[in-house]
Length: 384
Image 1 (cartoon, rainbow, N blue to C red):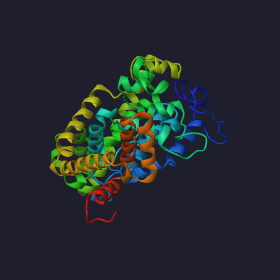
Image 2: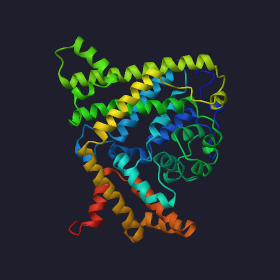
Image 3: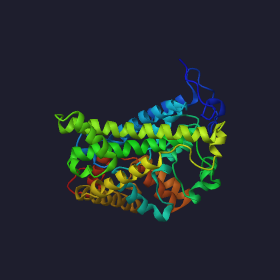
Image 4: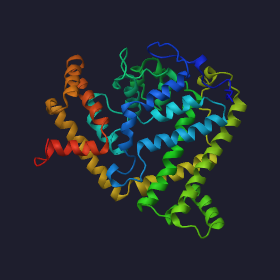
């Protein structure tokens, strides 16, 4: 049975197209083609060995950027279906949103941004767009994977005005104050749902946070008390799974019902009306938004700033800084294709071009590859 899209949903008929025109696909929609290109990209495969909080070698059960992206896609598709939006576009955005992430999570991004500050900075959303527009090399007729405008705009959640001016049409909404598709808006919040909920699970598994601490957090305490009441003999691991499942469901249900009310009130009749609405139309209720912020603050204080996480973050910063400085001082240490690119961009753009090529190389590394590259370059006893 074909799903009927709402008038305000994205569709092939209203798509603003691709940067390089292509013949329409025969057996897929344009957004299905986007999704498939993302899945087959090298950057997507590398997400398997890039982690969010814990470094890849610390355990096989912790979430990676790949599993996180798949979980975001599942949550986002559920929301899109309930709102009669385009599930294929939603899935494409969800699967692509972390393609530009560095190794070592946010610590890696902050470290690379610090080194790139005088060369234009580094931000993972912009890097994700750079990956799909330029860095993937899979097609004879164009650089990148030539995604539709709708997928590309969904990848960028935020952007400074100076950077927006360099992005062409896809950056205009940050300049003129318009908004992306509803599919992009909901995927942004699905990302937050998955991120916070699953970091609770990984945090408990690691022992860095405890059930007793989380009992002080409203969004956790309510389903936790209900699970304990209904299943008093359940062991801690299964209790955690049951609570996290309920936390996700509570947020998804709240988001769907709140957004339905907003759409009923605003009555956008097209995707263009969504763009011109003047505000986001996909939102949590005020109470759920407050509870989300409480959980987010708890995780920042008790998990992301835990001394064990900070130790690894400190190591990550050292690795990223040392790699960047070493390559900047001698590009001959880079792999031949990257060295050639750095030389070309240095000729065209000056030192900022060379720095960007090196940032591209480092950002594309997995956690374990970055560690090995650091060892090969800077440990005199390590084979090169």
